[in-house]
Image (tube, one colour):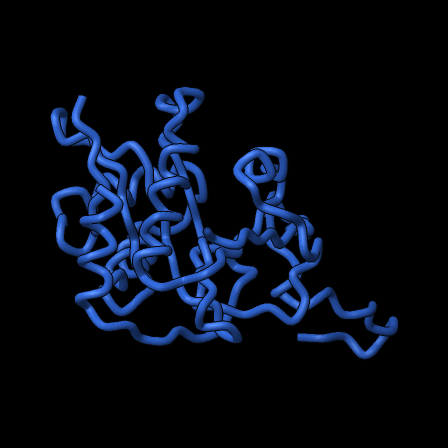
Length: 203
């Protein structure tokens, strides 16, 4: 098996497979998912895939953007390993490749959010900095809880990084209190779920 880290937007033969894998984990319309993935570009956000080039299949996907308030900080929006390939070390491998990619892009730290994988990221050196993600913004994420804008980087930086490296109102009764801001929660099975913000300083 030959494993490569590839830019999705220059390897469109893997696009439909990425749509299927992501929608299996986080269901949404194929059109919306495809539209989101097609936004991947050298100027960020970017979708990187861990591909089995021997069998022409996707093992994992990661989407990376730039944190809005700190342009030296990358934000991992989503990271996913296909179900049948989990438990084989590919998640750790993809994270390590993603960190190297971010270093090559000039980032000095990485942030991410998680609901139930705190221990996994802690083993990789990430520390909890906020369990509600308040006052945090980055590019519009694959998931509902992140909103904001992104900045640009020269295309040459991305190519170099990928090569190096090879997420009607009734009047009564009174209205209930408003829900927390979307930046603090995600919606899962019809319930609000707190996400934990974690950070790692790159060497």
